[in-house]
Length: 478
Image (cartoon, rainbow, N blue to C red; front, side, top):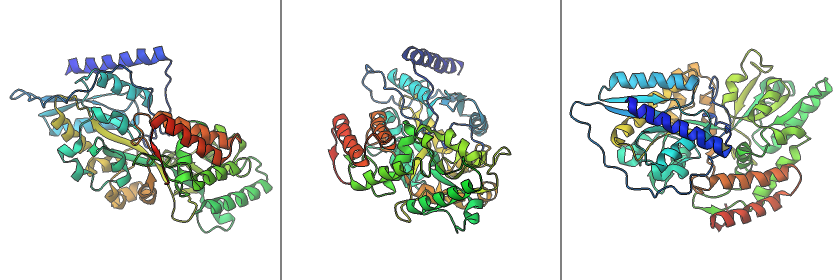
């Protein structure tokens, strides 16, 4: 057990040296749940896929046969968990619970890197070496396609039955060429935060269901608040900087307007259409009008700072911001709620899918035992426990949104069901292992629209051309 611990720690040290040599910095973390509401400590943004894997990795071999532990011996599995913080403390409790109940299969939980980029780098390093030192790992929602060849297929271990009650979009995201390579564990998605006190003050019965309603409400409330002396007040804040967060925001604009998902699950490039270009032009029209000019430099915490200070009527952000908005230092405590984002038409809401999955390395000596632990970690029972933990990790099991204990202790969670039933996955699985480049092409062109350098029509045409060159995929309608 000590030897395996030292081996994994050696991989961590090697990765730190490699990243330092390459100049790799820490990536913005996923709202590992969103990556994450309430007291969750992970950073809010969905992290882009890590730097490219080493180019000379040996060809993957068949997974080793299940090793049989000598009679009477204990199978010890290494689980690379989250980085230090509240979630890791909860995972320690889970490991202790499992170990107490299962003396024949023991978990050795190890802290993973805090940075999502460093974490996938560690996995890639281990996979390149076909190392047996890591058994169980946490997988970001945009990694299944990139890591699929190195992960077991949970369908061989009862996975299809286990995920029957999970959000279908997440199951589809985690299925690569028919193989279920990740078990949904906790989820995330974009939300619309709104000031309940200001909607009431200006005579609005509820939050906007369409982008047109959002624009009208934002302008009315902004004008009214500025007339009363708050010149720093804005109608709507969101994420407009050129990074993965902009891919998330812009995918929501495009999909909720009928413009598709950039690249379809069938590997067809669908971005070049009138609905998509109009959605981008619409977002550009907000800047300087209902959104601050500086929104083109905003990440999650920048927009939350404006909201937290009481200077926005609406905010697009991840669930992690809910709990922080209730802190004593918040100007909006007790004055807000969250709901699904608007769409071009009522009912066309879209929330970019975030969150984390459980995966098992196909190089594990004990894949059956590791799959058993993974299925337990992702079970309804354990998802309820992590929802009620201080981290308030959002379940992927739909039944838990009707659980009375969750409804009583985490009142905001049941309200999120419509958000996750309409969640849209980024095209990370369809474009693997090139999703990082796909996302860069997308958000760079969107950013050029937001900064007035090109129109929406030019942007979607340029994205299509660049994606054709990169992927070789066919072009089609959404």
